[in-house]
View 1 (tube, rainbow, N blue to C red):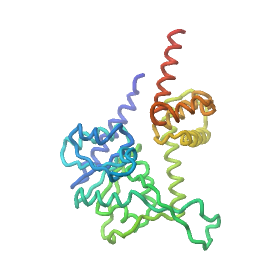
View 2: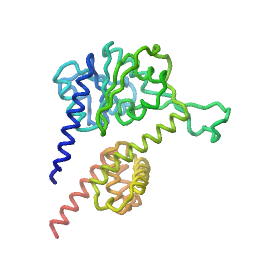
View 3: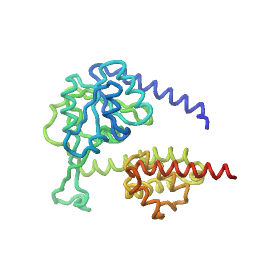
View 4: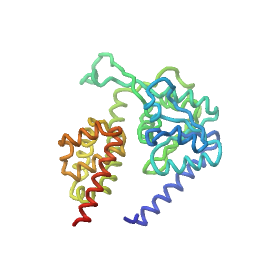
Length: 312
């Protein structure tokens, strides 16, 4: 299928805007890449002769470290151009400007790998309750552009200072175009301790992320399954998207790409896939991870359809 000319123009314009925004970040520039988008980012960076440091220390879960955040200094034109190409192809990086250099930014970003949020199991239904809020530590995926772009607008001044640390700017290449946040001048010193979100911020974050997720997934599924989505209202499609996300998560799917494939398979099967034990077993216990297995399943289904068309 040929790509419509308008889509090609949009992609060119989006790339031009992103590169222009990156050009305006003067000083030591760094990318934090999401390892989950690569087979083995550490090896790929080494093969390209680009230095990179994991924001997770060795000694823990190696799969989590491999698929986690990697700090890459963009200290030469070649490294920057190669990372730009990766980012324009998939939403896999956040860019930071840090005059204090790589070590200062690496130390800081490690301190925001986890944040404290209200434990929703213990939140009182009555917002005026005097009961103390219980908090839990969770992973903060600040290297995920979709997470950070919805997160930053919700922060108080003190929280914003905690996120920026020694950095002076952050650039996110979102689907709607590049978004840049600048560290306001004359802010107080970076507070010590973990970043803490309030209950109202957590609720707003959930709502914003749900809306953004539905928008992204809706665009993908309308392209992948035009016939199945043609008669649906946006409200109905959003309900399906959230239901497919929940059932996909239960099967072990963690990446948006694999969740979009699962959504396509569900739409194409009239929602029958989730009730077929052999499908569930293959995704959960197949040759690879659940995310890899659902891609294998898609390829197998595509080959089956192609062979049926040839016979017909």
